[in-house]
Amino acid sequence: MDKTIITEESESYSRLKSDIKDKYTKMICAELEAIRRYVVKESSVILGDDFLEKLGESEQLKKECDQIRNEFRSREEYINAQSELTAASKAVKNRKNTGSAGGTDNTDNTEETKRLNKAISAITTLNVTLNNKLKDKNDRRTVLEKELNAIVRENETGFKTINDEVVSRVKRAVSDCIAGYADEIGKLNECFNVKSNELDLPFDEKVIRLDIPVFGRRTHNESAANDDSDDDKDGKRNFVPSDDNNGVLN
Image (tube, rainbow, N blue to C red; front, top):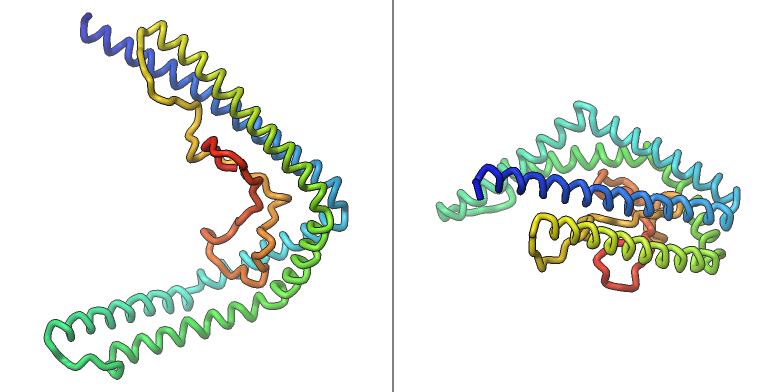
């Protein structure tokens, strides 16, 4: 067969396979979104208006804390303090490395160490100032978190029912999606005379995650008072646990 024809057939096959995969990825994502909406609806019925009001206040306080924290850390004084701390740390490290190589006495009473201590003191003072600005809001959030957790604990039976339904729906959705995808890919492979024994899924099993928080709730053991964190530490969620090893993170 001409190389041009082989290339065109390969491109056609890849494009068609990609379209099928995209189709089933959208299908599973749509189903997971429907499940998420189900959890929100049923949870609101179980928890009631008092929970929603407290949750709304807590989330608003979190937004306000995030804004205050971001604005404070974007100030020139704070940025300079961070830069100085980084530079001072490197200076101490370089001093130690140089001292070890030259056999000189490496004590804590060097100019580099004094500089580092001063930088640490400066950034610590700024962080204390920031925490003081957040204290009232964080204290209120701590109270709200305790009240919210108490409401959730009182309704554990209801959440167990929701959890069981979610797990059942997820298993069914994933099973149907994989079966439909395998059938279409099988027909495509037959048309293009492609033979493959590799496990092929319509989505990345390491990426698809059923992120269904109870109204964005954090885990019960995470205190609002300890919310002075960067973005990579925020957004922890209560995930619906999986009782199998199907590869789908939920």
